[in-house]
Image 1 (cartoon, rainbow, N blue to C red):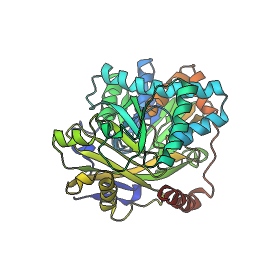
Image 2 (image 1 turned 90 degrees about the vertical axis):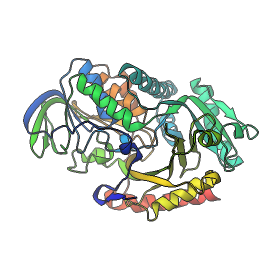
Image 3 (image 1 turned 135 degrees about the vertical axis):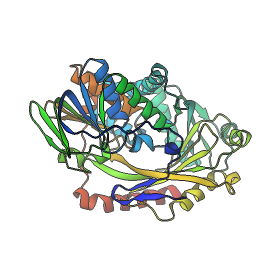
Image 4 (image 1 turned 180 degrees about the vertical axis):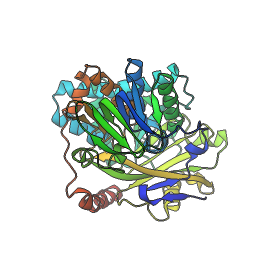
Length: 435
């Protein structure tokens, strides 16, 4: 397969997403000194969304990306466009916030899905959007937890779901693995790198100055913040830190913030193309799918009929051995019909998770904002987070402050102990999923 492993950043680079886009020429790195109203650090969905909205409000914006736009999790993820924050994140929000604010947080996440779809239309972003997302339980006892979550969403948030009984599950998926589930027809799936690059084009058209290959190694705080790269410096009234798991990769800009997230490796394979009829037989409605296990499988079909299948995560800080074969076994357990189908791509890298799995949005001082901790549920909400921080900088912080109220703890033991502690915890949950 010619897979390349970048060990220093935990990345496997043989991406179907990269192979199926035509990138523009790289933007030059920052050289010399410049100034802007806002400096955004990070060229993924959160950073691009903030930059775009700020530029459209009339702010001058410089965006600094350490690699290429969409290089991180924004351009590598499973492509599932979902409201909410995952069961754990939603429980954390519900525990900490008044009921009205928890409801508003949910509604803002739903608005994130709508924002993504509006931007697809407004900026003519061709990113293979398809409606429909399924959450499926592998056993009856797993379905009870899904029902608890779903009934809460329906009653507390007035959010419509379609319940899939054991008798009708075959109409949604041709797999022996699943017992029952729920369909969210407001959710869906996209080609995430196409969408991210489309958002980048929109931001640059709005006047955002983008510099790639420009990692930030020092942030000097003050009334005017100074953001340093190897070859240049940006003086800005406001800074938005949207580098997520790579925030401390080149220089620990705000240690108290980066200590609250943990890098987790997540990996996906893409099969060779199936026939249209074969793909339709496996997922007749072409919905995105995830199971309800703590260590979950998630999958969907691409526009050219490849199954994109993600399985499990790596909490060890290293890429698992025999990765492709391990994911293939999980895929064939779901679809035995694909036992002889070839795997043509495998890719992945780190996402950021917070201790309580809720997104971590806030400020350091009065003019440094950060967006992180999307915990695998950020494809839609990252864009909304960018919009919320733009509102806050413009003086309308009410929606941003709902999330800033959520308290986040650092991982115990710092960077030395958080990884082995989390590995032990994940082994426990893997055993629970099995038995």
